[in-house]
Length: 260
Ligand SMILES: NC(=O)c1ccc[n+]([C@@H]2O[C@H](COP(=O)([O-])OP(=O)(O)OC[C@H]3O[C@@H](n4cnc5c(N)ncnc54)[C@H](OP(=O)(O)O)[C@@H]3O)[C@@H](O)[C@H]2O)c1
Image 1: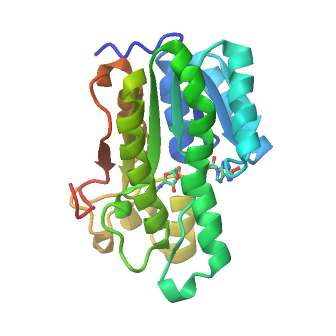
Image 2 (image 1 turned 135 degrees about the vertical axis):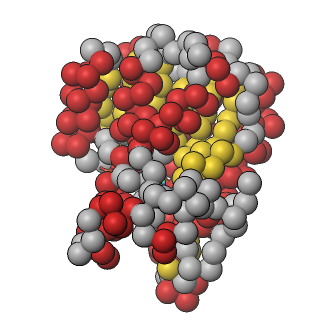
């Protein structure tokens, strides 16, 4: 399949670790020029060096917090300064936050919405004018499969993710006139940094293999997924191979979610 990513320019938020890092690596391997951003400078520098070493491609690491609109604008402008255009935006930065309604205080609600909903809005606001200049673009919002059927135990994440799915659909309807595609990828459980920390914190007596295959996760494919398996789907959606795909939300969850 021709992904036609050579010389396309992409930004991956939260590109220093986990799914974001793997996605940035995949896109650069396919020929894209890349900006990765996150808050932690050291992890960013390490991630950019690894991608350059493995691919020989162009990657710039920029420290930024997606909750701050001015940081998002700065990252987009720096990308344009370095590479001259913007084709792909992957809104990936995020963390999990899973409690019951009564356990979540109002500050936590606001922080979660700032990170997972406004982070995507902030970046997309800055990116869309440059995608219009190119004449097309691809925005991918990385969300969670629980956003489709929010459980009562996964607040506030499931609600901010449901809002992210609504944002994806509405933006796809509005921006289709500019040939800007907007899609979501709904993650179930993927072996990223945060999931490995959760394993060590809650079930450190098990090997990774035992934890991954634990029936309590209720994953029909019987194991936790790999970051490469998420990055493959994201890379496809980012590419011209998905030129007629917009306004959709693809589950990458081994069948775990209740909704299609
Ligand atoms: N892995 C899963 O099973 C799973 C399940 C459902 C949804 N997801 C979603 O998939 C996405 C990727 O998850 P992951 O598991 O790969 O996460 P991860 O390994 O914890 O990596 C998260 C990345 O986001 C960055 N980040 C966090 N807050 C940020 C902020 N305010 N501004 C900029 N960057 C920020 C982190 O760097 P810094 O901390 O240095 O900023 C890091 O690069 C997230 O949105 C996550 O919620 C993952």
